[in-house]
Structures are given as C-alpha cells and as structure tokens.
Image (cartoon, rainbow over the protein chains, first blue to last red):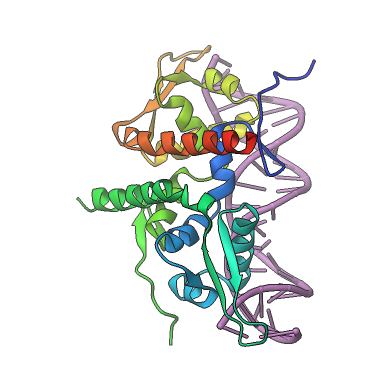
Length: 118
Length: 118
DNA sequence: CTGTATCCCATACGATACTG
DNA sequence: CAGTATCGTATGGGATACAG
C-alpha cells in the first residue's frame, strides 16, 4: 500500500501539495520577492537592480531573474546587439497579478518592524 | 571603502535588506505557509497536522513548528504530563495578523492552477 | 502520541574571475 | 553593460530509528 495519495497541484512541471506551496515555489527563495518588489512600479536595468540590491551576487541575481522569466512573471528586453548592452526587466501581465500579494508581503514586513520598535 | 551600506531591518536577531525579505525570512521555506494555512481556522494536534501533510517528515514538521513558535506566530499547548501526550498548536494573536497574507498566498496559488487549466 | 537523534544529500547561494 | 564559469559552502530538508 502506498501512503495516502495527496491531490497534487502542478505548475511548470513541478508538483506541490498545497496551494500555498505552489505560490511559495514560484516566489520563494531569498531574493525573488525583493526583485519583484523593485519591479512593482518601474522597469529596471540589470545594473539598476544591482544597485538596489547591493548584497546579492551577480550570479544569483542572474539566476533568479531567469527563474522569474521562466515562470512568466518577468520579461527581459534587449535593446542593443553589441556591448555595452542595454537590458530591461519588467513585470509581465501575469507578473502584475502578484502586485497586491507582493505589496502585502512588504506591508507585513513593515508592520513587524514597527511593532518590534514599540 | 566599504560597499554602500544598506539600511538593514532586524527581527529576532536576524537582518534583512528589504521588508519583503523579513516576511519571507519568517514564513519562507518549504512548509511554514502550509502549516500556517492549516492553522488559520482551527487548532490542530501534531498528528492531525501530519495527516494533513503526509509528505513532510516528522523531523521537519517538528523543526518548523518550533521555528514558528520561536517567532511568536504559533503557540504550543501541552495537555498531559505522561504519554500518550496531547499537544495542540494554534495561532497567537501575532500569528493571526498573518491571516490575510496567508489567505492571499493560497488564493494566488489557486488562481494560477485555474489559469493553467484554461 | 509527540516528538529527538543520527546520518546524509541536494540545492541554494556566495566569492571571484572572466567574457561578448 | 550584462552577464557566465568555476568552485566552495551552508543549510534546509529527507530517511530512519529510537525515546519519554
């Protein structure tokens, strides 16, 4: 006998046991929500993101941006064919459906900081 | 010269570069939102959580519950002094401030599943 | 019933150098 | 400017056995 089979949710080839897991699988990790937060209201170049997030490494920023692009949340636009390159990142329409959630995540973080300051 | 110092946010001895990071530091990881989601509307015993989450190991469930307790989101109540033990987990008042956020995380996961089904 | 102890592994992430 | 390549490490989490 197998263990009780849980109805799994699927997205982009991955399986999740809960709807919250699915969301966290897409926006989880150390940096994705930070990137999305910065892209919430403006399009940014790679270097602008780096300056906004000075403690993420180039490699990690690059990997996370690619993951967000693969999941359809972010679109990468290239404006030059020869160096120096100009590349801009922005939210897709699907990515924009996350706006209220990212904002809520940011707001709760702010709330905790203020709470702790009391 | 140091690199540009970012104004860090602190909570429970940990530092975060962004308010979203702080939230994710508290509810991030593979299982915390799932636990919180199940505790949203009811108090549950350890074994009840296990049955709701058949693919988490005992060790991990235990560690995550302890982390949630340490962060003040969950309270653990013990009702017996000798085996068989009865232990109940529920949200604290602080944990309840996460209710709308956890619900939004769940809702977006549901939304994605339905979206993908089209 | 409610966990710990022990061991192990995959993967996420960091540091640094280098390239188109 | 916008990344990739390479290497190293830390930690999160799984499997299983055992304990109060």
